[in-house]
Image (cartoon, rainbow, N blue to C red; front, top):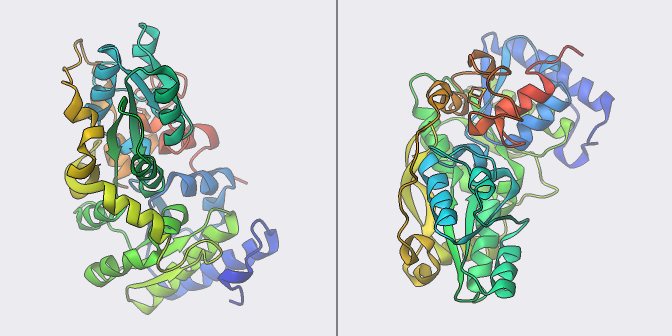
Length: 368
Ligand code: SF4
């Protein structure tokens, strides 16, 4: 076990094999099944794309938790965006949100029916749209801390009066607490998302570790980063104790990006809210605080209910169980049949970070 986080060669096969050997040695010491949960679609992508599960000892499993921001955006939040588009507002949002089903329709459906829905790459592009058109532009703002920070920054920069935010931003740590407390989950440790921790700092997880006595390791997004993060987690498991480590020191510090966090704290307050299919999670939704309420689309406009019949197939979607780590896409009767990336029934099949789409593209455990 000589590899150090600071010396990782991102895709070096020899290092990967050494780390896989380390994992096997550590699992022999544990002598019982171990389940690690990651909470990041980017981690699932690298795990699936590089077939990392095939390198793991049999009793070590990695499941994906509520780490896809598009997938956890609740249907009523999508409905609000659809209703605003159908009411004549220009709705700007990230590309991944475009086809996510609401209760009745997606934003893509609304656009096909004539609504003005624009895909943007950033919050500032949505502001530019408002400046250029002079029309009311509602930025449907989704994602975790990594996208909440730029949303906060554009609001701090005094955007035009015709720019509004429909915030569906979410905050990950409370969701980890909910998952850790779910009776059906048996998670032995969390691999935390390196990009979110770049903003929040890894110190954010100290409270969680103290409360739940579980190991948390912040990991990067190359294959060797993930294997190294798993090794650190197993070392904690072998010791039989919780603990926190930063396995992504080339990007993540204990404090994170203090300017970005200050912007989030100034613009948003946290409130309880439903994450799609998972639970009502305390303090896990970002909404605009009073000082920025003038930009709130919810406050500025009456959002009517979306009319129409819900697709009955959505009742069979088990995205919530998948994001809670208690089911895999293979257990969904619709996977690869009625539900495919070109015809998604649930949000997990839409986003590039959705577990179902990743499993559809790469297979859950490719045989390398
Ligand atoms: Fe939902 Fe489709 Fe995944 Fe099934 S395969 S859980 S319907 S997104």
